[in-house]
Each structure stands twice: as C-alpha cells, then as structure tokens.
Image 1 (cartoon, rainbow, N blue to C red):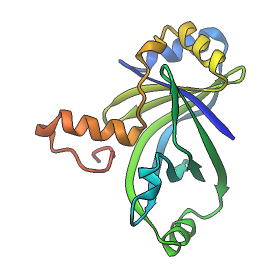
Image 2 (cartoon, rainbow, N blue to C red):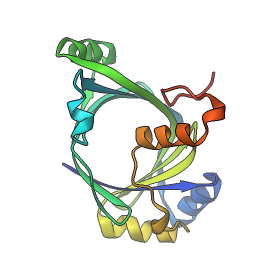
Image 3 (cartoon, rainbow, N blue to C red):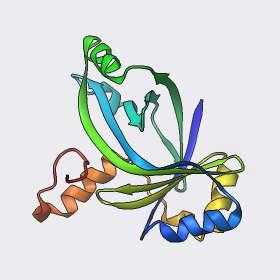
Length: 184
C-alpha cells in the first residue's frame, strides 16, 4: 500500500470542520485521544533509513504500521505503508521488544476523522498546535485542500515526531518533554 498525504498546520480546527460539513463530508470518528509509540532497533536503522515502525491506539483499536522512507512532491508526501489491526496492544509491544525493537518515542494527538469521496481528512489537535491531514490520491487531496480554504503550499514535510523535535528546539524555555504528550 502507498500512503499519499498532505499535512497543513492551521490556527484552530473549527473553520475546517465547518467547511467539511458544508461540502457534505461524513464524520467517521469523533475526536478522541490517539497514542502512538515508535519502535526501532538499538542501532536506529529504521529511523536512519527514513522509515517508521509504529504501534497506535485510537479509542479501543490497535494498529501496527511499518512505513518506508518518504518522497515529496511539493508538500505531498508519498511512502510505502503496511498496516494491520492488532487485537492486544500490550502483547504486540512485548513481541516487538522480544524481536529487539525498543520504544523510541511516544506521541499523542486528539484526532477526528472525516471522509469526503476518496479523501480521508484528519483534524489533529497536538501539544504543539493544530493540523489537518488529507490522505488519498494526489490530485484529490490538493483539490480538497483548496476547497477547505487551506493552502497546499503551507504543507509541512515532517512527521509529528520530527515536527515535535523542531518545536522543542524552537522553544527551549518551555522545557518540553522528549515525548509529544499532553500535560495531564
């Protein structure tokens, strides 16, 4: 499978939500906390190669994902992605650790999922701000971004972990944790 994605930072999600409703998009999942843990070998070969091995919990659902290195065309990211549901996240974590993979980073976001045609739209609230992710065919996500009032030229190339690291470096006085988690 190939993931084709556009990630755009926004100042609040309400205007995008209203635009989605106006366009007739369907709400697939109401906003809920999503917890992601990235795993890597001791030598960091997955991250060094531009990939990611992620165990995700969204609501009561667990997913294991392996992503290949990204390619960019403008702000649109394309990468190989292999994903499967997992019945028991804690057991999967023990399996990964038994295979020599260690948790590298934990990151959280409150994610709300919408669909319009063949495009999935995620409205993400993170500890560093709000983002809209559009996933689908390249032409469709670029067109929908514009219809939502978003500028595809404002898309960011980084993943949430790389964006978080840049955010931490840009805000040293905040003493932010290594993991991108909400203060509780």
